[in-house]
Length: 220
Image (cartoon, rainbow, N blue to C red):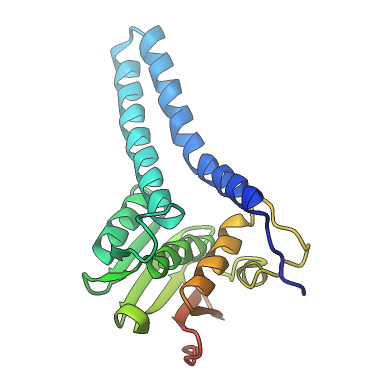
């Protein structure tokens, strides 16, 4: 399949659509909670509305912080990102969610594109367990030798449809829409970071491995 190259304006528009999609639900819940507070005098309903606003505010903030690192500039060209910050935003993203995240890795600085790739792979790992489950993230090495292994476990685990083609920049449809833009963008970041990504499925576990380009990918 030929590689699809998006115009910079189309890429920006599709990524903006993706971020808006992620935050519109908690923001809408905040608006609903505020409307209840305005219209209700019942104490129990007001308590419910306040709980909804608190939870949704945390969720919206967590998703925006995650998007800032995963999709945003996160500093100037050549900047590094603290893996501890990446872990923090990743854990915040899945707070109160049906996916439980575990993280093993050093507290170290890595080139920003490698960290952005890791966060985008976590999103893909989440899509591998649509009914929920666990995601184990392991980071080894440092700087240019860093490698990532993500294992998603859960009922009906599967390699997300079309993700490998989108990562390669060659979707079967020949186009990229808002639904596929995150995986396509992850592929752009992987190539910028000189990382190769592979997938494997073993029963109820999907393994995603990212290694420096030219290095043998872990099997199994």
